[in-house]
Length: 331
Ligand SMILES: [Fe+2]
Image (cartoon, rainbow, N blue to C red; front, side, top):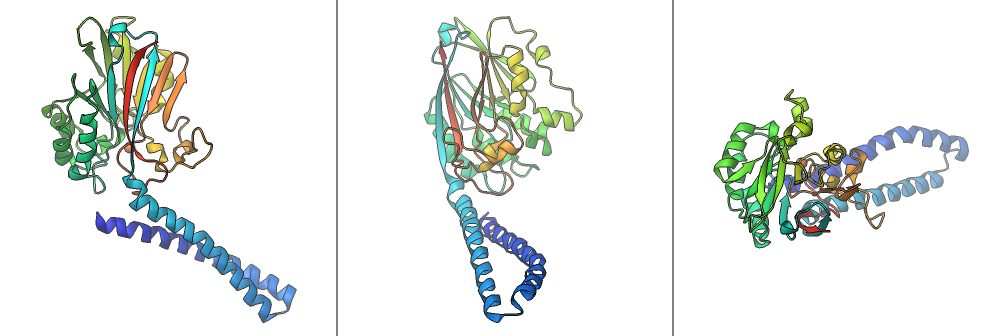
């Protein structure tokens, strides 16, 4: 891992240098010919232009290199616990105050092994939620990290259980092994099914629904996720909470009257620009309509967690790792 952390910024810097070198090689003949035409080989003018281009090149390289170094060594290690009280008129009064802690996109691998994960899980336990949910991408790919990550996850404790769903990356390893290890560690895997969660005094319930990743099921030619089919045996007017790795399911979930959907997947692009002020533009917005945080559509809400791990470049800039605590309130 140390080797990757050293190599990554070097690779980024080298790529930038190569790109600028290529651009320079392409631009130089044109500059040279215009210089010939305009200056008649005046060496002073040529030297002046060379100096000017060097300044431009350095001023572009320094911030880019600095950002990648910052993102790899500092930004990547930052954590934020995001806490939200969410009000729903459909929530039974007895479930008022029910708490959920969400973690997502652990991406166990070279940049997140069992040891690195452990301190975050300790923080999750200190929040003492009613349930803990893991919204997919537990591993990045392969099977090497399956056992150590599940071993670490087995330390999670919540009053009414720990639940997980699959993310697209979980399909790139041995999904059956991952799920059976999770179940053995007392983490219930919700694969297109639901669990009834009772209030502390047993007088009311909510229904926790988990679906497989919608992209992976399509890619691996599995049965299409059908929300109406999955929820058909949930007694009507009961409060439903959907876990879906991919937030793109939200429109459909809202259409079926599901009040709250919890997702991950986007990582908020791992880079969030400092503007606009209320919701910085993230790189994930290039692909997704909703990139991170809270969204509303009618009476339904979607929350997208920024994730704990990283994928692709091992950096985070203005995009700290996230542990989410949600408290359900009757409004
Ligand atoms: Fe992910």
